[in-house]
Image (tube, rainbow, N blue to C red; front, side, top):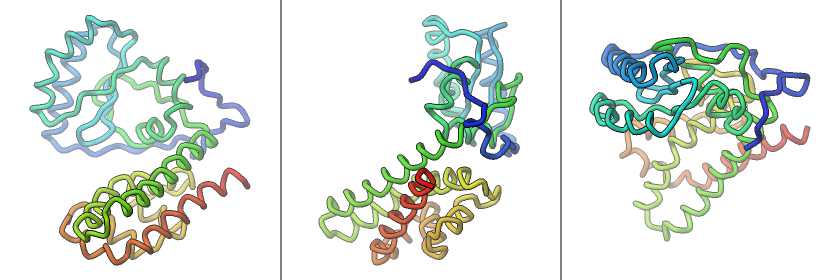
Length: 248
């Protein structure tokens, strides 16, 4: 990992001016995150900077310094967070965040774009992933998705149930990939980012909708097995679209 600060010069201009939106949390989730923030404040005291929810159960915790005793103290509290339905937060310092956004552009930009501040002030002001870093990360993600679809098809040995499992497994990564490509294309639809990105990249709209719907209705994955050739071709075209942006 490079030890450098985020370059926001000519080659590193924000791809979307870092426009963020608020992640909506239910009352129970908000109470759970508030309890998590309280635990973090007790452990870190003045070193606590901020807690940001990046998803319904996920979060980033920013503190000014971290040592082994802090981790030991948090380990004793983690079961409580899990009982509340929360994941263990990602723990980092503001300096680590600014110096590693080039290594994790997709993950960090997603948090910058859509989050809920639980406590403190997150170090997001003026931060945005470099467009080239984001494109490279999306290309890796798109190529990985395509390769795993090919590998999974071979390993299914032609069994319909195994192919249906492959389809179902692929849905969550596909959704994340399309949302990230949407960020790259600068057209993230708050209500349905994945579908919007599919339209931008030529991914068949009806296939995209059917695949994403399978996430909430696993039994429907079997009906999509006959469309695997179309899915594979669409995944390859998606990768070529992202790759082409780096060659333009």
